Length: 362
Image (cartoon, rainbow, N blue to C red; front, side, top):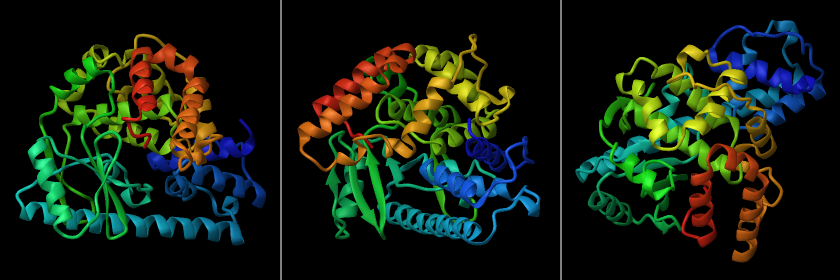
């Protein structure tokens, strides 16, 4: 890796684990070098985490002038966005609670609680899941009854905006599209827990520790097989592994992964978490039997950035249907060797669903 890449990952690991830098060989950086690190962080949506890592730099190695101001402005925007997200979550849970409805929060702010500094994690949309179909329908009536427009997505989920924040109401908890394996995963939906979001008065419902890990695991896999995915989701997985390591049901992760066809995928995923993000091996849900290189996964992550937005053709999502399907097919072909090696069955079902147009690419 070049000097800026080495700096980026050194700062990312420091910020992710709130610890001193493990390598100073790429410092000092010029203003142009800091600009490249900033662009990398923005593309991977880990600007706040990298900025946390910068707090462990000696003053002499800190960026100066305009370069520093760009970081500060970006981090301030991340914190403000997180406060807005927390307010909307509070409003949603109060609104649904008045109707006797309790949604399950997927990823997002629920995962932010695993970080030492949750406000530094860049947030996206609010993802909700209702285990009971009747409750899901009641939630939509509740939203529409308040004059909020709801849009149905190809995969059966629904999307609406609350106070400027996009809310996605999903029809499934986890992104596993092999129908045979999904039925097994569906049968494991139990053990919902209520947790208090850090720094807020909002209590939310989240999946069990094991399901939390599986949700993050399969979400990363889905996007790796398609357009691509950025480092934020890997950071989420690393922090979840670290924070949930002592939970009793997590000890079943190895058996469940094998049963769901995730064993080979987890070999490379866990290698990435330990090799690039610095997660100590002892904090993995289990240690894979084989050691595999994570270089191919690294290439996919760095090429596409956040949800593959920087891959060629990704900007054409608003064009004709045939063009979107063509670009989606190209993204699968680009990663086909990786996909067939680590998740052949899931690749088949996910690709088939996307090309039929009944799955969302988001």
